[in-house]
Image (cartoon, rainbow, N blue to C red):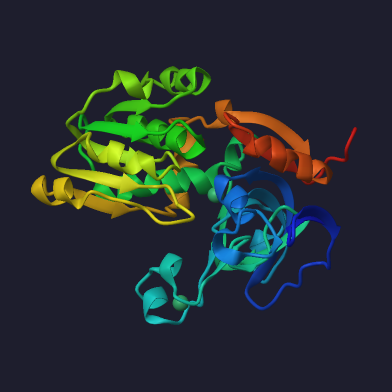
Length: 321
Ligand SMILES: [Zn+2]
Ligand SMILES: [Zn+2]
């Protein structure tokens, strides 16, 4: 089958069919989303080699439980062992021996078919379109901030960065009833935030501030200190960016203002799919283009271009079809 593989470079390859083990499901991919993590991997992040991709909507071809066969699903990306103390405590996303789809020890979903643990499946409600459902994973990551901080309605939130994850975080915080501001450098992206009721500004227009919650999603090391200056005393600074490299951080303000610094990664698919189902968050304005999987090398180049948003791969389309 065809897959988009990263080894010495990115290439479309003919790879072996994935094998379904015990407790696994075999999926036929409909759409897959290109994420900044995929782009970071091609620059050396995680030392991953193999089929890329971890954001998908797919059909179940085979599973141990017949009730899943034929279902349209999204899948959680952390493949936990299910037996260690972390897993037994319900923290499979932090299982020390976990594999992660397309990121760590498991082939990804930029392919015609992919195998995931049956326990990772989430059924997509019928009325949620593929183009929205494919955002379940990054949207779950955006909801993780809310799960961790449990902010109150009306609190003031600032999202720093108008990339894909920043925009999704802003949409989620707004949908949860926070007075939400986003700063970013791109007028086109600020307009997407504004269309969902978020106040959006260019960074130079936002002076030091006193936000209850600041979410750093710039993907730039310099975004961290800039974000710190906008947190109120005893407020929270949540980090969504995964940097490939070292960070410099002035810890004086952190200590003096007793700021909580919070790392935030993957989140609850239930909340993400519930928001898509209810229509309280609509991520589809982030879609720049849908490419056939066979055009994946070009799609990755387009996705890494400055200012681009979400590029999707359609595993069912042929070039020129
Ligand atoms: Zn991702
Ligand atoms: Zn485990």
